[in-house]
Length: 410
Image (tube, rainbow, N blue to C red; front, side, top):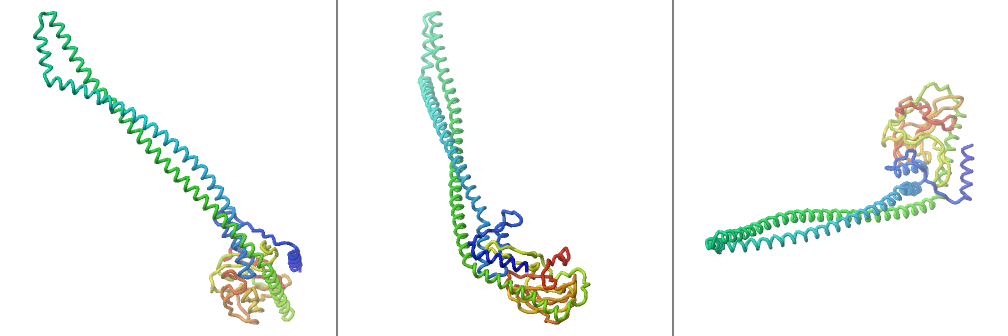
């Protein structure tokens, strides 16, 4: 009754309140798969509603969960654009400075090369004069001296001419050495300029790529916003259908409880249950817990009356303990649904129920033993995938199955 009153209050509130969609956060914050977790949670919350409503809510959850990452990418790429543009401008200025330095050093080398050419011409003239007989003329000058003093004067003049020739040769050698130094400097400056220009080109490409990435990130965010708005409209359009299906789920739950009370009144509570902890009904892993759930997309509460155990379709389902089959057939959102009564426990009839089966191998009134195969895993009824919805009920009222199953779920 408390659950029914809670549902009625929520439905009344829905009649006067505008639809406000609040997206649940994943239990564990992991940026890598937030969207996937949000979708899985949305599907679990909306298991009992239509595929269209589940799809709308899942799309909304996916888009909403992806928004923070998309917004972060936009902000990050904008920062990268600014940084790379600064780097590109700095590299361009460095390249311009290196090119100017190369031009200055190249000009110095041109001057040095001109000095080498001038010195080489003077040495060539000296060599040409020597080849044409000037050495003999100098010797004749010494032979024709009028006396010792005249000889000394003429010898000094000849030595002066020879010293001058030596100076010109030394000047040529020095000019060539200076030219080689300037040539090396020019080559180094050219390499530095080319390296700087190559770096500037790379920084420019990086800036252009960052700009492209920023544009793409902005476009992706815009598309995501549009997708979220579309999903929001789709979810709103399913509101009336979802509420009707929730009411149908309430009626299905009421039928289960009524049927169990009817069985108890006809057959009695029975012998005390003494089977101990239950056997795991299927090999799989827990995909959803027992308990009341709030659907933030359509703003209603729903009781998830059992524990979901994911397993491959067709996996065998076994009786958790011995008892008599009291329900076996189709039951709305539960799909193919089997309930087994196991006797009296804590003053009430203790039963286990198995939903969404692909096949059932038992009938009402049949006695089954602990571990006997009663059906196979499926996805019938309101189900988003192959799994066993397993319930433990006391007088028809569901309680958390994990209290009675092995702690390891094995």
